[in-house]
Length: 544
Image 1 (cartoon, rainbow, N blue to C red):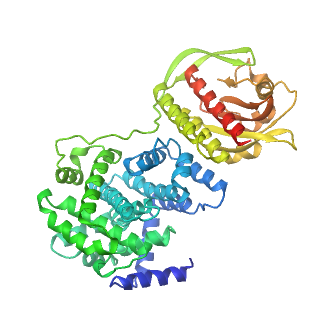
Image 2 (cartoon, rainbow, N blue to C red):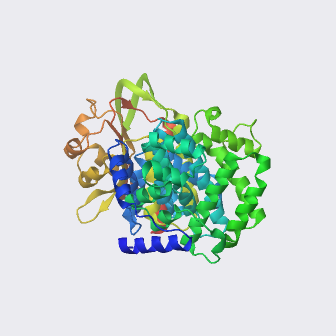
Image 3 (cartoon, one colour):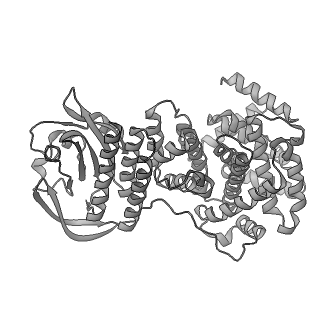
């Protein structure tokens, strides 16, 4: 869509709701320039813009999206927690990797969730005000409500409802985060019975809605999401909305429901909710019982997931109001959704590290890192189960190999993981894709020659032996490390798992750990990594 088309669509949409676009371009530009001077806004803009501009048109796009998300451990965990929540339970099973989430939910759904949670994650890190934390909770509940309303209304890709619900609060979030003093003045005026729009325009020159739309366009968000930020003046008059119109209606209804639940006592909301149903019901084709179920299920989900955003529940007025409204003030919020994986801080210990290299013992004694094996074991087990489920269905081989690689990466906390496959013309194994901070560099240089050399890679491939080197600087192995590896990679520790089928070298999985301390892989964890490699062999056999 060209900028001119986007402007016309926005103008037409505003007219259909009894509103009109404001001529506030100069004011918005000035506010955006002020926000650009804030240290974190440019970084937030770059993160959202990077994710949003990854286009789903080829295999590399899945790799690019997964790689971007995996750079942020907290964001990855929240995306996976959300896709494993009750909202997505219709997919069945556990989704333990971003790559698997893309395979199941679709590229656009995961990308949109990532953009939304990037915004929420950023807002959470800004701890300057308690109000901002409350605004984040309100946005998240609105997103849950909007998602369930969209599903109830039969919206294809109803996950987009979640994004539209959260971003309907964008203007308020930006105002509280970047114009805090002005937001206090606006709240003071509202407390004196001035409308929010009038107060915001008097103080800052634009409404929350205007600011939200301006920032959304600055981030190149899809026009459907931009339009959903716009308030609806007369929803009852719109009888045949298209999907863009419906998403805007859904975001507005979800926001109104969230406000009702947080600002009214539980026994005094029936009239307000009935009025909302009358206003929006005809356009969205949603009945009284359906709306009631949406509210109940959304609040149940919100309370179970609120721990992702609230470290001190007793200090949140918004959370307290929602609990009171739901009648659960004396109950702890349920945590029925487990984190797919967590990595604990490591503690040093002294022990012997013995590694097998093609039948030879390579022994080093050093300070090594004790790993929380329970977390690693849980993560690897979840990935193995995930892959087992995929193997009995129709699957794309590259997608499945990517899931295996990501399971190794996140499950063990490796610095880098790579999949190398055989290039017949050059008679070497070339890195095809991977995860980690140095992936782009390694994809260019990580090429393993096939031949009779006696380095650790050749030994692993020729003897089909799994090799783990705990310390590449150890005197017992230093002569076995090839020069190309020393020059281009040179990690502290690494693991090689060959992929050999019918005595033919197909490829290998490579993983390394480049921190200063030595790295230990416990035997049962090494066995799980081998299981993942064997699943890859099975997948290749089935497809060939």
